[in-house]
Figure 1 (cartoon, rainbow, N blue to C red):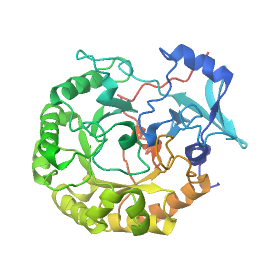
Figure 2: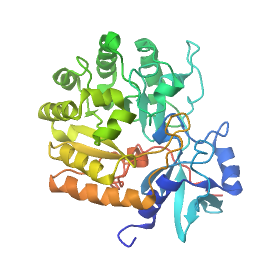
Figure 3: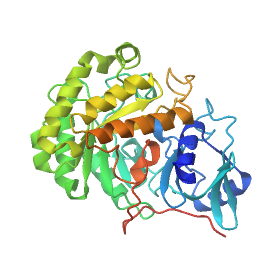
Length: 375
């Protein structure tokens, strides 16, 4: 514990165990939100309340409303006093700032469809979900269980939704991630059109693409020419036996296929613009660390995402990793990455809220809006 600040230590604890919200905090949150919604709650790893602890560490804190399957007897509380929000428990305490949702969340567009069908903002990044459902099925991911796969959404509606998110009066997004569903083979060309259109319209503000490298989809030199900022090609799991069970479609593509793609992409973009996310807590740590090594040796950026069992998935009753397991994974992965001259990602401070990464502490003039709740 001595190696970490209180906010850093609490980040591991809160990712693993979540927090309850005191009546005093709920009362203040109700005055800071339009309708009482306190979390984007659109995806397993983003289901919690986004906080910044001690003005430094970002964390996505699961709460019982969205994760009753494991947030029950947590010792941690998001509380409120005269000087604002704070988190406490187990003799730890940190001042907290609350990230309020954008104004557009929960509203509909001119086409009558909810804007959140297309875009959701977390921190300072808006995530564009271009497909209805997902052509792949991973049992830790809620997307294929929330929606039956039905292809790619209309690109014009997505462009309008992105503009809305980027100009939101409360939380204007500062960069874009295109993610959230893999297209089936008949829809590859439509997905490419989405990439090219979004990059043509918005590349100067920073557009990242997170996608499985299915055949014919990702033309890395073309994306580079159009101004893509980063690619995220996620291995997620290393253990062959588990991968064959919980992410069978990706397993069929093979680990070697993903590693080869990472290496080729790094050759075009440079390794610091290519990252790969790993799920921490599903497979043995030794397997995850092998994946960190394989990513880092290719000059790419490993990203560690704590497994959070989503109630909509077949893995809803699986236990999340403990805080101690998360700390050990972080420490060992950081050493491995550093031995190859690589740091754990992501580099953007607000985007670290649901990953095992600490904020750099670099402040920007256009930071997301945060509420201290001071009286």
